[in-house]
Image (tube, rainbow, N blue to C red; front, side):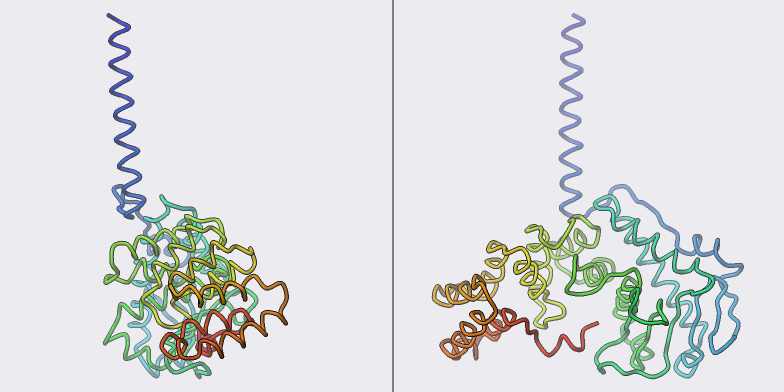
Length: 335
């Protein structure tokens, strides 16, 4: 009887474990957070400063109680108190999102720790800059990354952000959080695409379910590096509706494919660009070519042979140009 009882008990336990595993797998795939992991940004930064609302002007910067410095020029566009409040709300929402994602990957907690550490540096705290603007007009903000500038860490706001705060606050929040993650060392076209995917995962409420899942898995740190074929699939899936180089990320997959010499990765790109057998064969020959001179010759031949197709489908030209280590002109205005 005791043996029968143990068998029944073990069966119940096994069924329970299957149920738990099934629920976890569903949650991981759908990015559904049953367990709410709370991260209180304001509570954390209160440990750094005396009073959150304390703002004093010193040496051209308004200094907050939690060690954030705001350029005096910002006061020409918006009330410093409004900007500080908006920034703080953005960071609270973004860090809470990363905290929830930490159950699917290590980056959520790591990035929260990095962002807090920026405010702990009394000698070189994070700064919001407003004076001057040397970048493209359609960029809302620029963030620094380690080694990029003597003024690092900073968030540089364009003149258009004042209006954006009123007309599309979610877009501005997304941009600010994206740029703050650059301060933790993330760049574009190198390694995992963290900044764009975290921006989209945490602030874009209009994403479809499957694209949200792809963005959130990348932001959470589910993948070790850019050579993971599943990462590349998620990157393409999330970004395929974006026409520009900066957001569709096809070049990132191409660069990873080139470095790893992975034809499987390159085929992912071909599937997004063309199903024509002759075009695929010609592009694959360029990709597999052993030296730059051969690549250049084959790419020029491709441009001439398929010029009519390229006129209809410019992405074909992008694939051939990337073989020549070129990129779209839009890359010069990337953020």
